[in-house]
Length: 401
Image 1 (spheres, rainbow, N blue to C red):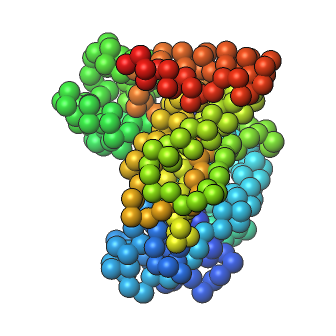
Image 2 (cartoon, helix red, strand yellow):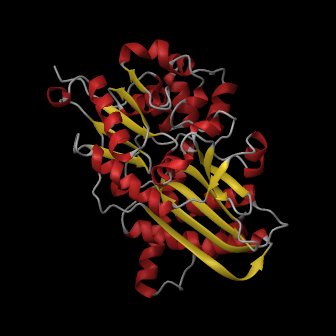
């Protein structure tokens, strides 16, 4: 009989502001947040400490709304380089517990702790030890989910914050997991949750007990994973990453003149997305997060991101960027800089594990786009990058419709 797997998901609490509190202790015990542009009192909340959250301040909240809720909120400008350094310190500490560590984002990672009981004690004791060490050595807080799979560990980590440790084993699923609404299930986005709700599937328990064939028919391959995850089934391994793995590929451009026309902005975005697509395909990678940056003529910066099924297709990167652009375009504010990036890479252009299930019915279309892109890359490598452009293909495609 094989040994039961033991997987941890270590999730740093309020990470950005937590990092700031390590170098500025005066922020401890007062409502504080990392925000877009504190000087101009504009932008959004990127991370709020728990003192600020007590006033109702949340991540992604517009700054002026947060200040209405908490007028004494102390604001700190973001320092992403510093957060990256702190993240590396966290990952280095975690790697002392197991070499099987998979970083899921800047502030969380899965650890395969199977067979470590003889060294670190029972899973709960090992988790307490990790939490204490992170707190003492790095001055940061975390929550830890413990389970026999990555999916269940991720769900468990969300259940108790801050400084929470939650176990979610097979026999806990009916009482702890199934009562939750489907929108709280890891990997299910708003669109998919709405679709499930329309099918009468409101909770994770409803999804678990639903007809698997119907779910697969409705959501494609991702439907199978979704149904299995709801039943606590996830055999995906913890994939240890090399230190030199690509974290993200981004391109940005400062415009020769400020623009207010979204169609012009889309053309620029297209060129940038094309460059990113070529780069990630060259490295044999696929990314799951598209991130856009807009800098206005008043120097206000807005950053937004969206998660998608893993892709290296230029069209998918571009369309996701366009969607974010449309949602955040303000005609009254001319734009000076546009940037787009792709991150959340998994090795070898593979890995559908724990993929986000929105748009999984488009999986075949995505693969088609990727094969067209690869054919284009070959032609460009042989004849030069100007010979064929993604923009030209888009125009041709539009002409057909």
